[in-house]
Image (cartoon, rainbow, N blue to C red; front, side, top):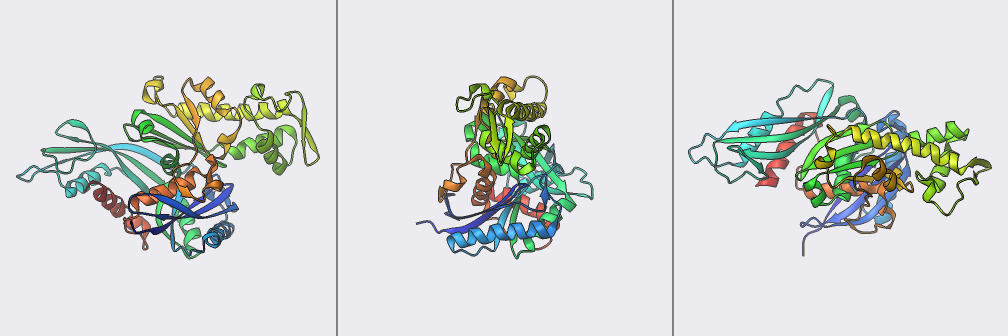
Length: 405
């Protein structure tokens, strides 16, 4: 029987904090044993705006998760999002100079170091260096070059950076409650682990995680990440539009969006499109509510489309668009997505873990589940406990070398 170990994840979102605790085995199975969900505080659009409030919200979520399973966690995988995140693709090349011309793990370190030779401003820090593919003597499409013979090794990488101060504030909040951080993970990368199939990543797919404060986008192609972006528009803006457009308190607008919201009301049979709906003493037209929601969701979908280069996006992502995040629960969003993008569209559920998953069987928890899956794949990587910025690149390269040994 495989030895079990404990991992935890913390999704620090704009509307909620979700802590999950799971048991994992050496073969990558993830069994959720504890969940703690609390309203978010001290954050806006994925950024910490009040450290004390954010720290207490995280503490409350962690405490709930620990109480639900009687485990005490010491560290966690933490999600990162926000408009401050940026990405670039870059290449690296090295020569194989040994007499046997055999590619070894040390050569992976050298070529990845070569690829990261871009100028990173002092106010930005490295988050991920992800190899998209290798070439050996011009032979492209190589996934694992270790053990191959060649004179020249090339790599294409996707490099993700984040604002140093934003990362430092998030780290301060988590460490302020006595937890170490196993890894900081870009949230759409984590969500992709939870809702995308390997086939979709191989042929080409777009993931759009429409959360509370941001819409996180990743494009996958040939089994690896091709492009990533963060849009500063999501569920919060939907609710704000409803509140302003219909003259409602924000909390009432949020509840109406959750209970009655649809982007394709013509398909709804449970409510007459011309009927008034009411919540907490406030009455509005169902049609007006859905019109406002549809306008904002159309904007999000079109902004997602703009992240794809050129007009030939159908050949780039034939697997289409996978929507996840809390706002993807809006009725009719798949139909609207197909109408606008002319691509296959589905809503992705995080269903690749077992255990107490009833509360997590919702697109809103794709990042939380994905962080666990990311951790299960990389839990042999040594945790960073010192200066994260100083040690981050060393951790990234050692992780990649372990994968290809």
